[in-house]
Image 1 (cartoon, one colour):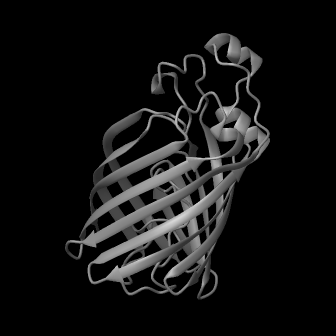
Image 2: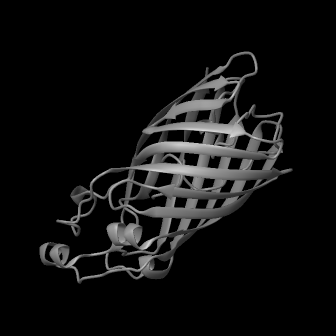
Length: 268
């Protein structure tokens, strides 16, 4: 699923229990605990190494799923002027500008559809592009509210998100529930869901030219359980309902998209 953030970095807004939560030791405004920047007050370095299983649609709009092993490594460093982290295919920066408001910048490879994703998509493969995610988030107790703009290179256009989330924390358990509404411009929707006359001739799909607008409504549930000071179990379920011209695309075989994953990681 093409979501803001990195892979599961993805769904737009995840919250923390407060701007300075006691557990986990978040010092940034990242989207998910396991992808957050510096972790421990004693050291500016943060490293997480994890392994899980993830099931997701083969491409955004597919009615078929793919299940695979999901390894990840996150390395981060805390400066006086903010947090810098490297995770997956993305490089990020985050900082709390006030006690309640923070920003997140992240540059990463945007997901691209491949012929191998579905035997019905012959001739409809895409080229990978770079995307810059610019997010602002406001924290109010256990609640968070955010907005994001994500322009991309090539013909990928711009995607925007508005969202809110709430966090529950009890002893070793941390749970976040988040909702977001996304939209995109004409270039983005025509690149991801449109079919030009040339592609129609190659693929057999009818010509389709969306005009931009709303793209999807999403819900995300994240859970983290602290097994020990360094070991953590995580689980997540994402739901996305495609909307508007996106949902009407001939390339969309199911406008209800579900992604789920779980695993373990070690915090160094």
